[in-house]
Amino acid sequence: MIIKSLELKNYRNLEDVQMDFSEGINLLYGDNAQGKTNILESIYLCGTSKSHRGSKDREIIRFEDEESHIKMLLSKREISYRIDMHLKKNRTKGVAVNGMPIRRITELFGILNVIFFSPEDLNIIKSSPSERRRFIDLELCQLDKIYTYNLINYNKIVNQRNKILKKTDGDWVDLLDTWDQQMVQYGTYLISRRQQFIAELNEIICHIHAGLTNEKEEIRLVYMPNIEESHFEKVLKKERERDLKAKVSLTGPHRDDLKFMINEIDVRTFGSQGQQRTAALSLKLSEIELVKNKVKDLPVLLLDDVLSELDSGRQTRLLQSITGIQTMVTCTGLDDFVQHCFHIDKTFHIEDGSVIGGFNE
Image 1 (cartoon, rainbow, N blue to C red):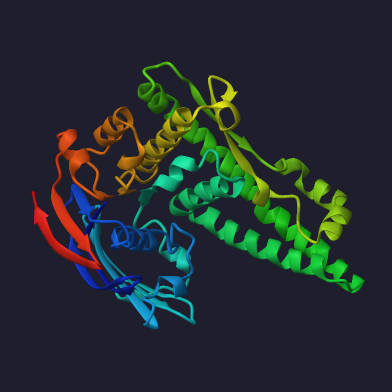
Image 2 (cartoon, rainbow, N blue to C red; image 1 turned 135 degrees about the vertical axis):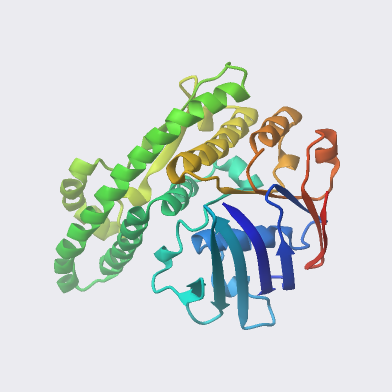
């Protein structure tokens, strides 16, 4: 899987940018707030339809403009694809693949598999449960269209149910039975698929983490469902009065969490910052292997100023792991790469929303 080129118009601070990428390591360097992360964000958007920052379309469009355009050319298993994305301030984004508009955004998923690693990801372990659920959902949506279908519908049902819970008119409460049935239908699939996903990750991450720690630590991911599949419907009915008082749905996979255990100790509560960052790094490296196993192809790796957040040992391990995979790396300077004698295939200097050069090394 290789991204050949990228064109951006009126994307955040990038007015008109065109880039042709190498199949290897592409380095985007420049001072902070120049547009490096915006370029990576646009790539991620083409693969997932969402910003890794959680931004809405209207927040992505350049301030003084009404629309933004992205055009990407990529190759996957020797088949060429063109993804065109049209972002509008007051309307739903338009997406076309090979010149044909798609009717559902899920048709985009699976064409481009990307793994995004930012400094914020190093805090995934000590962040809120919503960030860990978001990690699971974003990865599964790229790998499993059925999961995406169930997730979209489940979220719609929860939102509708919450609206009913907020109404004071008792007649509305009778509608909850219908919403509950659908909530259980879609929610049980999410619970089952997440359980499977974490089991698959565990088979990979244990070996990667052992290598990062010189076999001193064993890591284990523990999926913590808010409710077991078999009990979902029963508990939902039992807790209805509590939901009505709280005016929000308190039971379901929208309240799941993920626990990281190192040597059977909860690293979120008792681990050092170094252990937490190593666990996060292991998680991201495991993503690469999982995608390779599932889609029988290499994903594109996006590294957003991560090296500056890692110590020398973790920098070395990360750089060693990305050989043979197309990578877009952002940084403020070239010192880290010079220090590690790391090969760079193409260099782009990003300054004030413009790309200066694009030099083969």
